[in-house]
Length: 151
Image (cartoon, rainbow, N blue to C red):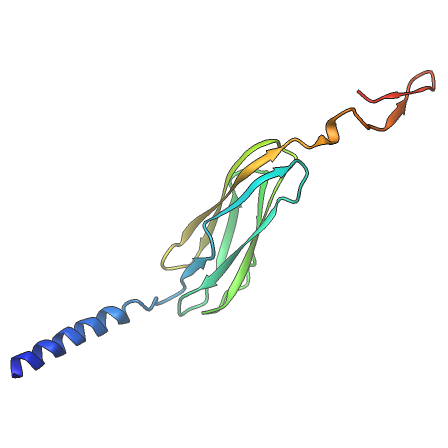
């Protein structure tokens, strides 16, 4: 009987030790999604999206840098520390004047103990808008003064 109780206590102690290790010591970054999918959007449409960052650790999380993979992807990060359990927002703006597929990334650098460098992505497709068609386009004057279609 003593051996059974000793074995149970050892198992219980092992479980208690492993569950205590689940608590993240120091700052820990957690993001609501790894990828934002725009789907198919029109040229010139709103190219903004947001990612929510949570500090799942025990110390303040400091995001020191957010960098887009190219000039058409502009992230904006709050430089204020994110306290344990608190959230912050990373805003990303994509230039939708560019037609074609979207597959860009944003690299987040922080003091997080779990992922000091975290990469999030945006994807989708920008289709040409009908604004460029000549049908219904405003008339511009010709050199003779008579209006002609803009082509």
